[in-house]
Image (cartoon, rainbow, N blue to C red; front, side, top):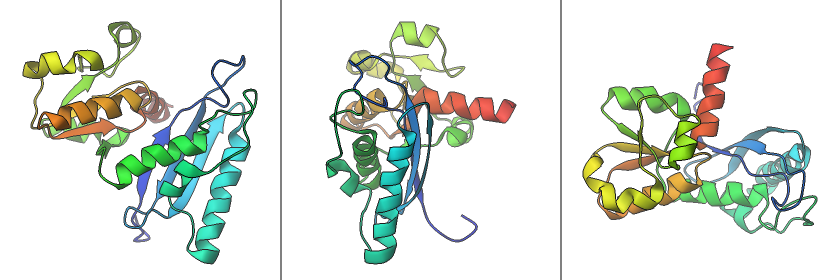
Length: 207
């Protein structure tokens, strides 16, 4: 960064409230944190419902950082926030940010940002869509191989274990795929935020 501040970025796309309750809307969040100590540096969010309260929580966490050296990305995992199915989920979007951030912070899930993908491909990375065939058919990153996550172990011979990027819709199955491939010796990265984040980035470039 120009200011010399190191940061790590994650993108998540959970529901505004419990998915089984009618009217759930997607909340897209971008959270920034210090890769060395996990302190939360900022966030953006958009959606039709529940955006304000998630940003309020992040703002409070950042205030705690400034005043007391307080909350880190890991701390978000265990925050107990108000819950009712029509207003939130048992695992809130804030908790999800904590889980995803923790996996990145501790190195469990190496990630790649959407705007870094073409550079990675130019350097020889194979890109694999681990969603279902139906999802792939409804829209995918051009030139990517579709291997559903449940088929990965049986199709390792099709994968470049030396340099591979995986993606799913929002990142969760990509995380699972990353763990499967790491266990088989792969040098693998998960596309942060999945196809949803990549698609949003492409629309921003074209607008």
